[in-house]
Length: 192
Image (tube, rainbow, N blue to C red; front, top):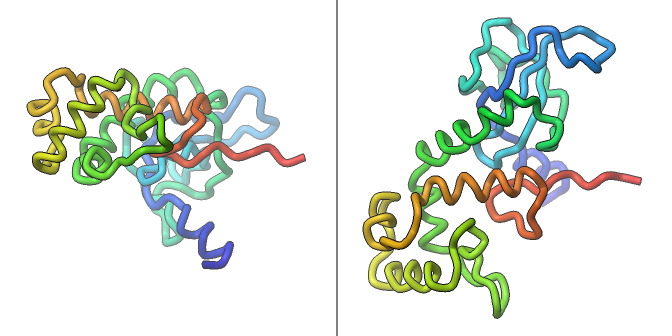
């Protein structure tokens, strides 16, 4: 796969609006409207210029290569630290919404996750999952693959809400506070 094909594969098709700044950032020299977005597939944080002022927070918008109806241009990726306070407060809601609407994909993580090395299993990266929870999850999945979040919660009673665990892990990765990135795109490395 060429580098160009790989870049295209990493692009988001849809995103959720985290915040809308009708006059842009106060630190910006130009006064243009800005939206902060969360990509649906790889949880990429993006900044874009809207085509129309009728953008609602929490709304799903198309940002792919085709004709966009609400987004004019994608300005680039953001870090968690560059998000506005409004975007940060909306982040958990957006992440949870994406997880719930793609239940099969995220239940699949519990069904297929494997060890990272001889000491750490990838499920232990989820906040609150230690050796006891890991053993209970692996034993339950060995009996029968998980079918839904409800199935996980009922068969692994010690485990917290699976949606919340995954959402917390995604936000931890978005903050850049992780050594391993299992659910999001790693942050861009600064070029020197």
